[in-house]
Image (cartoon, rainbow, N blue to C red; front, side):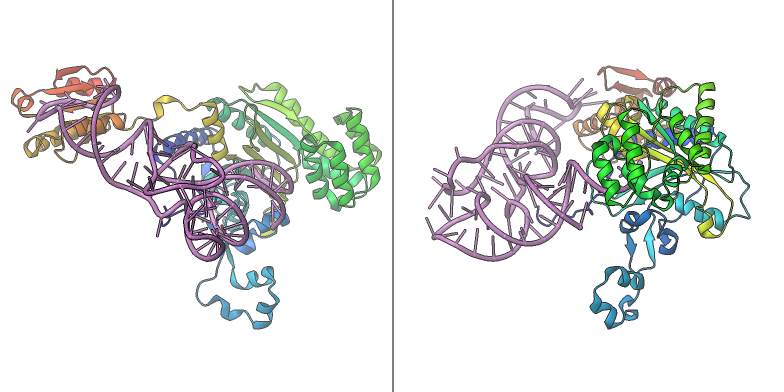
Amino acid sequence: MAQKPTIPKGTRDFSPLVMNRRNYIFNTIEKVFKLYGFLQIETPAIENLSVLMGKYGDEGDKLLFKILNSGDFLSKVDDKLLSKKNSTEITNKISEKGLRYDLTVPFARYVVQHQNEITFPFKRYQIQPVWRADRPQKGRYREFYQCDVDIIGSNSLLNEIEIIKITDKIFSLLDLNITIKINNRKILQGIAESFNQPDKIINIAVAIDKLDKIGINKVANELKQNNINDDLIKFFKNSIANNNLSLENLKKLFSDKKSEIGLKGINELNFIKEYLSYIKLKKAKIEFDFSLARGLNYYTGAIFEVKSNDIEIGSITGGGRYDNLSEVFGLKNVSGVGISFGADRIYDVMEKLNKFPKNIETTTKILFVNFGETEEKYCLKLIDQIRDNNINAELYPSAAKLKKQISYANNKNIPYVALIGENEIAQNTITLKNMKSGEQLKVDINKLINICKS
RNA sequence: GUGAAUGUAGCUCAGUUGGUUAGAGCACCGGAUUGUGGUUCCGGGGGUCGUGGGUUCAAGUCCCAUCUUUCACCCCA
């Protein structure tokens, strides 16, 4: 036990059974992405820290995995700096690369770098792992996959509708009951502006986001601690207490305070509402929730978050519109909207609810038993023919005891076993064993192929 | 980053107020059954009890440190 190898905190190995199930999720998601006309890209696991830093808020920066410079990286650090023991300053000198934290920021970087090859609006999807130096706990890993779709280079709110449709389609295929929560950052910004604290929008958003969890009083405390003024806190307390935090109420506030951005947010939200009333969703519930904030800094318009209705776990999917993300990389006026499916959390939910179909687990359809050199040569020819018919088949690699070979088929859930020994060769036939029923038939190769195909 | 709990065989766990050689079930390997798995019976391998130190005649059991895993907060998929 002592010297057994381990893997780093928050990372996992995926065994064959788990991989089958993970691939089922990835394939379902990818199929829907393609159905809506998205094209795939990949970006490197490693990005320059200058690309990653400052995009996710202070908390996000702390959670970035940083990579040491190669070579004698300490030689550039002078003794004064070392003795100060300021980790941030020293890190800047010894690390210039990091592991990507999400797929959206690398995508924005990609768009700016490849702007001349891209036809806008650009619809891309990307399924790759991301890394966060978080403390692992339930549904939280340090390495996990995100499945992102984004449309960049179009302001149309039709894209938001499409994102909602994609989300609905994927979760209906996976047979999960979910709620899509929708809000708009412009509304939050309008609130901040209306009370003369436009710079506090992040603090306000993060505090309001906890409304469901900790209640209005604790939210009020947190707002106070962040130096949010009393007028705003009062507004919240009153409207929540009177169950009155409605679109109309907010609209009135924004009109009174002449907050253009707030009014724009309300218009955008109404657009989505109106269009959603035209189209049918298969499975998803929609909830407009003014307390939804999302921690990532870069969102500027609609924001989405998906929760499981049946399992208590953080959000399993999230996204929104970002107007200025490519601007920080030098490309102005390119707005994007996208959403990210958290494959690992979706897996956890599906496993708890037992939602994985049974038929995704079989791999090999037929095993050829190996009786020795003459027989294996004979089998090799037949097995080629079977594989040419697109049937997964394998030959046991040694003439082990029959018991062992059949157990192998049993453990691997292989439904058919072909036995070809001296007798069968002489009679030019195959003994085919059905592992479920235990039945054995003598068949020829064509019949065997037909049985395996059905 | 803050606060808690946890660690005994591949897995799930027992192990009394500290006291011989640390157990069970499942899994694995072999045999009953040399051309037949999933059932049954018999046998077998596998542990310096997370790691390092300490207390004691004696530590899986008590103390300290450290690591791991898990949970909550923060934040998030």
